[in-house]
Amino acid sequence: MQTKFKVVFLLSILLPLVSVPAGMNLDNNNIQQIETNQVCQIPDAYYIRDVPYVWQEVNGYCASASISMVLQSMGMDLDLHDLFSAMGTGFSAIYIGIDQSRIFYPGVLIRQPEYLQYFFDLYGLEFTTYLDTREPFGSECAYNYDRLGVEYVDYTNSTTPSPFDMVRTTVSSDIPLAVAVDLYYLPPEDYADFKQYGAPLEAFGVAHAITIVGYNDTSQEIYIQDPGVGIFGDNAGYPDDGRWNYTMSYTNFSRAWQSAGYVTFKLTQGTGPIDNFEERLGEYLVERLRGDRSKYFKEFDAFYLSPGKSAFSGLGLDLAVDSIAEYARNFQEVNKDEALLSLGHSMEMFLTIQYHGYLHGLDTIQDILPGVDLTAFIDAADDAISHFEVLTCNESIHTLVGIKSRDTLLFSTFEDIANDFQSSGKLEESIGNHQDGLDEIRDHLFDIANCWDAAANALEVALDLPDDAVPLDASMPIVVTGSAILILAVAIYLVRRRK
Image 1 (cartoon, rainbow, N blue to C red):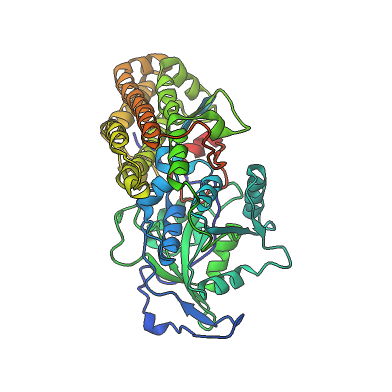
Image 2: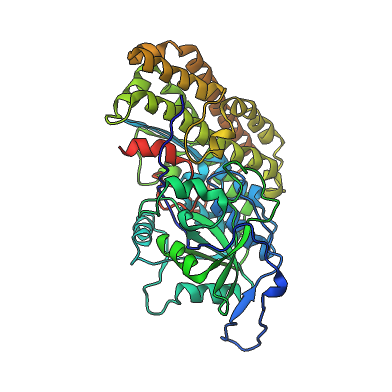
């Protein structure tokens, strides 16, 4: 069985761009970098040379990759994998199980504005988000920021520079600018499927993050490093041909930026890491892993929200005949076999995104917390990896449009259920016929939950935190909105869910 759905995105926070030849390698000799000693004078053209390129590797991590490019250009040795630890995304997760929702959300998709702000506060960096409330996407972002208590600057304010002046002042100060864009308008061929089956970004859609490294008022071009090139499609893999480095005309770039509400992330040096950095971050990671509800949800809580370790056990508990049947029946306008198939696909896809963040977060956490003996923590956390490997598949995140059959435990179990139901029309019986597969999946999920609990306990012992330790205010309310990420994900699942 193979199903092809239209691609629809649902969150966002980013900036615009558009065309010029994809795969174009920039010739620095053709870019005039104007030197000036006059304060307040902005050059007509500027290009920041040697900005490290960071590939996002997996769907959902574009904002982290774009920010890593900015951080490294500022002299901070924090690559993408370091951010999985320092932002806590590799060790955070939630599960929503109610009505037609059976959704596992990896840490990177849990309210980006809050964990980004936590990270910048932790490192003492100056971070400002700009957006335009006159644009539907920008207005929706502002609404969500207001609900979260996250500060932002509105471009509509008469004292705020225009979006393009923000590019000029920031880039000419030798600081790249991370921005949100509408994927629909980007030139790389890697996004061809989205252009064919998708549509321009809506207010509730998902934007993509890129990094601006130069501009030229004379040629009317913006110079871009795109972390998302190569993460899906026929050419999936690290884009070593340099096609991640391309230019866009001001006109096309503005179209893509405007569609994403002119969302801009400006980052500059601040006061440096906070006092007790290791204790603060360590306690934060303990809360993520253990699933401290008061820290994840703060003022918003509900029985159907399961954080941290309970995200895995909650998903496992819902892999029962009655729960899966209830889910399928909630899709009134969708064939139940397709609903079952997309459920298996979405679970495998999101668990794969989580696995990458978790695996690489474990690889780098000792570098982030060098003063803490993490031996016992890493040993406990490593035990979850073999279970993740059984439940995940990179192919689930490399396809932007359509669901392809694959011989994996999780997906093939739901594909077999869907095929049985398509033949028999008996929902509960079709699910029950594959209870062995569901039980095996459940066992692995329960084992991951146990590993996260053991890892949290080991980390807490390693930190030897005092009882009165006060962490940064780092709650991460759950609903996924206003997230600066390239989610080619929710596409296949949510298109049906929205119906």
